[in-house]
Length: 259
Image (cartoon, rainbow, N blue to C red):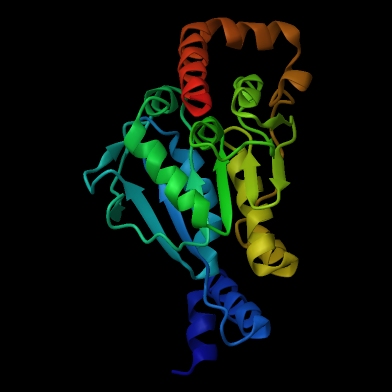
């Protein structure tokens, strides 16, 4: 069976991988598939991880799911994710560092020196430093947002300036090597935007079609501007305790950076 037959047999995903190979070939013989270090942490939002991962996987690149060790990590759904490598063993020369969110998990890690040190080290060398949802706070606590435009989940964006970031309310924001996305479902938008930078716009358009990413939400309430003040205030009231903990933890992390 030749490569064409193999690709046909793999279906649409195979076509994306073939297109990825073609894009790298056009870039030159020294252009390998991109590599990714995706942080895995307790109580992360599962869709924060698998949304972008679904796009990254189509590049044909190596994806490292990185935990402190290789013990399965529980997500907010209770579905465990098993890291493929540890902080100690993860390569330090990846193209993309990615940090998912999850409010409770993020709050715990804002005081976790080991995790922040890993993010700081790998982020300092990566071609792209990225995150979505509340994960962007961890990038800030690691000192990677200073002077950069960034976004995150709408209810923590006001904390980003504590880390020297320039707050943005856009769904996906690129500022140099920093690429950040909003909450949860924004991970697909983020993944495709980053995929376009890594592989080219034509490849990203094809990936969007393969994933049939054609959002048509049943309700127009996915942002504070669309949901209205009453519904927004209700969400903030219900999450008040967790958001207060996030503000306190972010303040401590910001003070450590200043010290």
